[in-house]
Every structure is written in structure tokens, then in C-alpha cells.
Length: 329
Ligand code: UDP
Image (tube, rainbow, N blue to C red; front, side, top):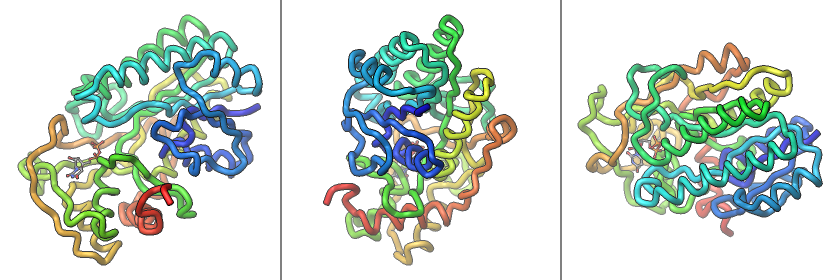
């Protein structure tokens, strides 16, 4: 049987597809290449180019391939863009996923793992954040992901499939091979932006807000290596294939780093002074987001091993210094 990876040419999708191929799984990737890169599709995976909204396209894959599990990454994920263009997010993340569910139910596919986010929580009630904590998103991106989770909940109940929703904290790093890594355009994430400075593409990094209620005044996040995230998806597929119930899991290291601390570690890793400029807060940024991932550890047996920030930034740097323009030649 094969695993269908939707959005498998994107950042987390391609790292997951690569790990699956390495473990000898039969992998089918579908991606519309709107933000993904054909170069990121691992050798050994079968590739279909097409869109989530296209029922005929999806039906064709289910008819041609023997798929028993889906991993669904095909979503937009930029918080700022979701605020200025919310309907783009509802259209893709919710309407596109609805078409996928129709096709999946029509072909009696029983297992699906999909990307959710820490943004479903909004401003957290407690740190570390538990899966049972209040979900009150503060932007359309988080809203569409929470609505997706609810759509899966009710559709699974009605149609008898099972799902795992994975709420990622801050995905970062790159595969140790240095062959694939993060390549967003435009880039908005902290670590790749920091690394543009030693790469000669940016004069300085802006620190968005220095007056938060945190020890050094800057935001605290839980940075998790993309390979550890990839492994969590593989464990979640196994969990579903073993017949376990639908559930939701946080994925983070449970350790928070401030923006200043991340910059400091990047200076150490790259040997570059990386000037920083204190700037105003970015709208919608909670002061702290740190996961409790106890549930994923206990239930899925997940054990994130690339958990030092130094290792994460070293792997990211290994990718970015050799691919300053991402996958573009
Ligand atoms: N950030 C920053 N400067 C930048 C980009 C991000 O200070 O140029 C901060 C941002 O405000 C947040 C943290 O870095 O506190 C992580 O932001 P990112 O966009 O990487 O991920 P998010 O937490 O928004 O998912």
C-alpha cells in the first residue's frame, strides 16, 4: 500500500516524504507547485501535479494508486498574509480540504494525518500549552486550521475514517544531507531571515518587539527540527494503521527560546556578528508559545532527537549557505 503526501513538494512535506522513502515506504506525492518546489520531491516518490480543489485530479490518484493513508500538508501558512487576504486561506485550507474529504470518503480511504498549528490556541492560557487548552485563534490562518480540525472531527464520525491532527510549533532546520531545506518566497520566518545576514542578502535582522513580558523583552517560541516533525508524521500513520482512534497532538520541544537567544546562537554557529535592529512589535504575535508534547511522546512514542537549537541552526545554515536562493539555480 502507498501513502499519499499532499503538499509533498513543500518544506515539511518534502522532509516527511524523504523520510518515508528512506524507510522503504511506497510514496505518492501530489502538489500544485504554487509554493512547493519540484526539486524537493525525493527520488523514489511518484509525483502528480495538480490542485486540491480538483476532484477529478484527486479521484484519478485514488483510482490509479493503492493508497491506504494520506498525509495532508497542502495549505497556506503565512499569518500576515492570512490577515490581509483571509478568503485565500478559507478557500484553500478549508474549501480545498473539503474536496479532499469528499474524494477520500468516496474512495473509502481510512487514515489521514494533517498539519495543524500552535496558532489554533491564540494567546495561550498556560505555558506549556496542552492539547486540552482553550483554542481561540487570533488570525485567519489559525481559524482555518481550527475549522479544518472540526471538519475532520464531524466528517470522521459520520463516515468512519480516522485522523490525526498535528499542531506544530516553530518548524525549522533542514535535512542533514543539505539537499533540501526551507525555501519560502517571500521569507517571513525568523531563522531563515537571520541566516540571510551571514549570506550577504540582508544587512541586519529586525527584532519585532522588545517590550514583551519575557526575561529579555522579546517573544519566546518553541523551535522544532523539521526532521523530528517528519518522524512524528510517520509515527502518526503507524498509529492509525494500527487501528487507533482519531486524536490531536502538539509537536514541539517543550523549551522556549527568545528572539535574542536565537540570534545569539546563530552568531555562534555562523561566526558572523549578525547585527540586530530593535523594531516595533509585529501584529498578532503572542509573547510566548511553548508546547507540552507529553501526549505525542506517550501515545505516539515520539522522541524528538534534534532538539538543541545549535543543531537546528547548524542544519539550517548548512542548507542556506549552499542554496542562498533556495531551489533556484
Ligand atoms: N521575528 C522577528 N524578526 C523577524 C521575523 C520574526 O523578531 O524578522 C519574531 C516574530 O515576531 C516571532 C518569532 O520571531 O516572535 C518567530 O517568528 P516566525 O515568523 O519565525 O514564526 P511564528 O512564531 O510567527 O510562527
